Structures are given as C-alpha cells and as structure tokens.
Image (cartoon, rainbow over all chains, first blue to last red):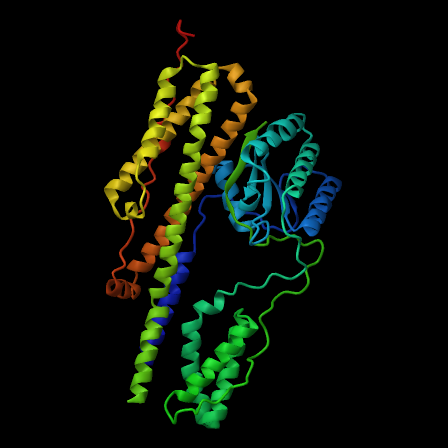
Length: 290
Length: 198
C-alpha cells in the first residue's frame, strides 16, 4: 500500500516537473545576469562599462530599484519585444513586491533597441516617455556611433524618473528563499513522518522516537525554506502524528521542540554582484530603432 | 480500527495534496488571473482608441473609411458582454476573439494610413498615442501568451495520470485556450492610393 503511494507521489512530482520545464529551441540563449551592464558586442570600452556599472549598482543600492543594460549582436529569430520579455522573466530585475526594474536592450546588428519596464514603474516611465527617451536621447547618439553617450543619457533619465516615484526605501535584508518549496513537499514530509516515525519508535520507544521524528522533520522543512514558525509547527505536528500513529494515544503532550536550524541561504551580497530581486514584467515599455 | 482510520486519513490527504487537487486550485486561479490580465490590456487598448481617432481626424479627416472602421470595431468590442463563463463557451470565446482581432487589424490599417501624413507624424500627442498603442499591443501579446501557458499547465495537470482521477472525481475539465490566429495576416496593409484624392 505504502509503496504504491510512494510511486504515485513520485509520478506526480515528475509530472509537475515536466509541466514546468520548457525547451528553448532555436532561440538565443539568455546571458546570465552578473553585472548591471552586459555587453556581448564589445562595443563599450572597459572604462565605459565600469562607469555605467558603478552608476547603476550605486543607484540600485541607494534606491532598491534596478536598471540593467544588455547589448547583444542580434535577437533573431525573435523580435526584440519577444526577446525582451523572455529576458525580463529570466532576470527578474527589480524587487519582488515593487516590480521596479528596467532593462535597456540593444540589438546592435539589428539596429533595434528596447526599454523594458517592470510593472511597478509603468506609472513612472509610461510607454510614451520610454519612446521619447529612445527617439530623442538614444537614437541620435547611436546614429553617430556614440553608444556610451546614448546609454549614459538614457540611464540618467530613467534614474531621474524612477526617483520621482514614491517607492519604499531599500532593505538591507537578504531575500529569503521561496517559502513555497516546503508547501509542495508537505506530502513528502508526511510520508517521511510515517516511515521515520516507525523506525525511530521501534528503535527508541514511543515518546523519544516521536520527539526525534518531529525534530528531524522540522529541520527538514527548514532546509526546504520554511520559516522558523512553520518549522516548529511541522515538527510539532510530526511529533503528535507519530505519537498518535498506532500504539497508545498521546495524552496531549506538549512538544517544545523548535525543529532544526536553517531556513536562510546565501551570505552577504558583495557590492559588485548584481542580481535580480524577483521583479515582474508585463510587456510595458517601448521599442525603437536608429 | 484506529490504525485503519489513520491509514485512511493519510491516504485521502496524500491523494489530495500529492495527486492534484491542490494543484488544480492554484492552476485554476492562475488561469483566471491571467485571463483578467488579458481583458485588462484589451480594455486599455479600447480606451486609447477615441483619442487616437480624434487626433488622426485632425490631420486626415478625409480618411473616413479607415476611421469609421476603427470606431465600429471599437464599438463592437465595447458592446460585448465579457463574463467569466465566456471561457467555457467556445463559441462566445471565438466571437470575442474575432471582435478583438478586427480591432487589431483596423488599428494597424489606421497606423499605416497615418504614415502618409508628415504633419500628423510630427504631432507630439500622436507620437505619444502611437507609443502607448505599441506598448499596449505588446502587453496584450504578453498577457495572451501567459494565459495560453497557464491553461496549458492546467490542462496537463488535469489530464495526466493520476491527477485525472482526482479531476474526474471533482469535475475539473480541461479549459479551451486561445487559438493564436495570425492576426498579422488579417491586417494586410491597404494599397496606398496616389490618386487625385490626396
């Protein structure tokens, strides 16, 4: 019976994973986000890149909003707008709740560019304004081959516009891993409680065995990204569950076992590592050419 | 007896969480949310039309055919009753799509015609409207793609074993999705007429 459920569970997990995986065939591979400015065309000199990078990372640290720049040779076979949204969904520039990210994409050989605006900034940078930045600031500079000047002007304007928007101050706290992971693992945890509970109870006796099971499971949930409160809850639930499972009924014992440690991942972020904070995009912004 | 009860409890809870029920809930909500986003963006586009028409009229009032086409398509879209039930009624869904498609092609014809009027093209408010329309069309595309993706995930979840047993038990059915018509093919540019009416 249990084995049957185990295989069913595995099957479900596999199917879920399958539904989530996508093949990107024939499309340009998305470059990883490491610095605020990513130049795959060798257009900008090292000094220019460093200057832009410094400006943008500084802005990101001061305000919490993020502006990133990407130069690619071409986005073919996709339109720049298709490529833009795909990139934005992968990079997740901006903060998770504020969705305050902007990406400037330049496809050099296509002579096309796009400003991709996150949900939270669609008010600060309306499409019409984004279009003006492209046609009045970027395009004239690009026409003369002055790529750095164009990008410099455009990022200045974008930063000004974002600063005009009332957004919450940046938080120094590390972003926690997704708290949904442990939720989807709940059935697995229950399963582990039964198996582990049976083993530990056999080894250590009813009460201590249940206690160990609860503690271990709390720790496991924490490792999967649950908060301390939920970890404690899961540990307690597993403890009670294990105790109640067969044998004598537990007499309402309180399991003061807070579960294991964990729940946080990643150390402090270095000043030169630029990564997205989970911002969402919905196709706002503007495209243009030069 | 107690052991049996525990086992039963375990089996039902496992089968609901592990094998679909909760997944249906979240995916169902996901498709609904994505659908309202689609409507949202279509609405945004419809709201742009009156301004756009009046701006173009100011420079190209004799392009009546195109202007009335856009206005009529906009009126048709506006008169449609869009209820959540629309999603489960393929016929109404197709009608809705056709009306939106007509507006899409009417708008793109309007834009093509506008190319012939340098003064209109230089008008700042027209340029802004054009940028807004482009942005909105792009948002519609993104919203539609996300809806299609969400429906795909929902349908995969509902149809795959062993979730389909849960789906049958609770009456969850696969949802219809957009047939991504080639709207570009409908919106062929009109012949530019260099006759004596210019």
